[in-house]
Length: 85
Image 1 (tube, rainbow, N blue to C red):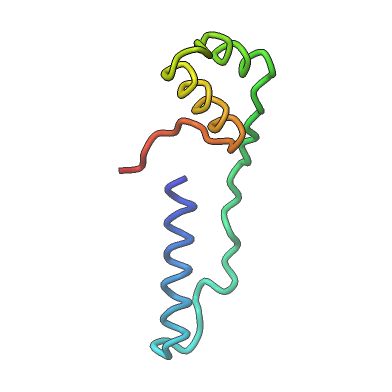
Image 2 (tube, rainbow, N blue to C red; image 1 turned 120 degrees about the vertical axis):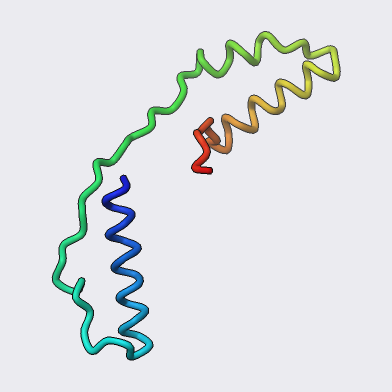
């Protein structure tokens, strides 16, 4: 990931230099982009979604809140991820 990111940032910098007439040509114009493997995230199965939903008590405020949060996270496709900071 770091090599791809550095190339992308360097290419953008040289494009900016060219756009502002600091350099006559972009040295990265003929450099091929680095290909990164695509990660395909599999969707949750219905069982994996319904199991935590079934554990929520529908008669309590907390249970209703928890059920709603689980379904919102599922419906919007949000996933836990490590921060970059």
